[in-house]
Length: 293
Image (cartoon, rainbow, N blue to C red):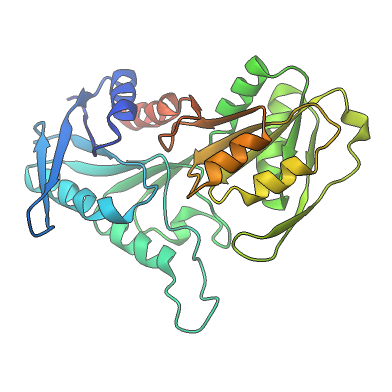
């Protein structure tokens, strides 16, 4: 029986591509607010007797999370055999320890809420830092997919003679994996964070790569400060380009980052004008493997 794929509002395009690739039925989730501000949710599509995949990227999650829970509960009440969350971007990975007395470790609380609502979680490149895997947080089965092959293919097809640059030590996994796939050199910069919006970056000697196009790669562009500072350190090289997985671009970050690069490209994990790299094939393959298992 076909899977039922239900996008929360704002995720329809991604869900449509996903449904076509994995031969699922595309439904819909209708949401609105009552006059007192409470949420109304209605499913369009029959969940009875089949797996339901609810598609919702979790950038800026707070306004939509209750509707997400109501949609999942409704699908289960109407007879779904399984209710999965497909979150191309997974929120609440930042606060993974108590830095100051009394702080909420929101990554643990959010994982508990998601685990109590869904049977399975599929996501792309969660920002793991102190936790080695999602299974350290979530009590449901999780599938972590990696966008690096998709980024590598895009760079190989669109950038001549790239030099892959990771803007900080955490990006080594991105830079190294992408560079290896396309046979390009890579370097990693060193970042010292001095606050939420203040960073200092040290750059190694890049004189050997003057004939190459610098391509900064990272998993998340949020405040954009790391990318902006890194771009400023590349004076004398070809105009730099930037490729990221999750295009959050909070507040004025997009205008600042886009001014520093010849081109900024992202995946469609978070809807944004910079989206050029589709992730639906990645998630569809995971769902199809699930059907075969």
